[in-house]
Length: 409
Image (cartoon, rainbow, N blue to C red):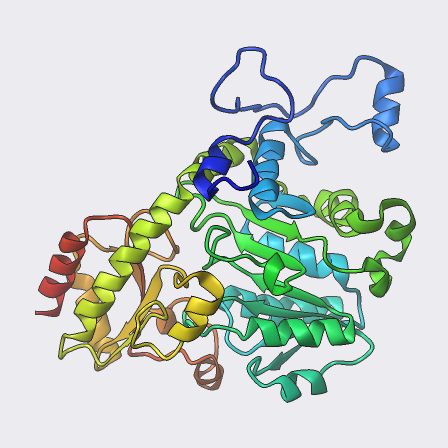
């Protein structure tokens, strides 16, 4: 099955254990705890000598199958499913860093990631150093002996800037530090993170994978980093070797902070994975059509979508994402007031703050996601009060165009 297409492979990944009823869908194991055959067996499990599910906060059969599907589809070394995309980010940073360490990140980040980096991690003694990730010299100047990773978003949200991933990969290898990508906007059917030198991948499964039906996050270890280079995994290296990072997450950070994924969530995400490729393609085609329509309207001052041929970032979109840099776009009207008036007249497009839902969603990032940031911080993040973010869904595109047309009139 290694040469099968993404959807074919997803639909045909075998269960970890044979289902006695030969169900075509993985059963939902909505159980808190799991029984053992003997006291000796449960002791062996807690010693790590016998693998089995014990308690759903640590693992469950349904969540295990979702993790297996992601692992198979990405050809990765290890996968951990967590409660949200933010849990994926925070669990990863806490597993690789301690007080006194630092990571390097771009200036343009999703608002809540920026808040985590600016307001939360410093209280744990972890410093985040912000840089223009397109400037290799600026990035390298920030690296010191306590730098544990370079963190970037494949396509920034909502600015839609695309990182020079090959350049960042070269820097991380040169200095022996991790390269971590937030690939939320570019799901695994369009972005081969491992091939481009990414070591750890995090993303919100709430977005493309669920289609707006469930809430979850994923951490992927691509198995291409020497964990001996990170002193914070020292006590795991001897026993667990290449699996040190995932084991530390499961047995320490993830288990002890309680960021587990519910079995019901995993069930939704398993179904979402099977039709991911179809939905992304539909959203992408809608994105292109809407981008061309908006670009031709005189009331629209600016349109941003790297998938459009005339967008300056299209070259990188073709290079890294097979031309599909996610399915969110931005466009500007003449003022904040014009944006609000437009949004209030929409009838099909929903005013909501998710991404990559099956429904098309719109939000004004300046007054919502970035509301708690200063004017200067919003300027650095390139978030304008004239800009709206459109997450394009799977509706019939002619209906979306008609809705936008009447709202602009």
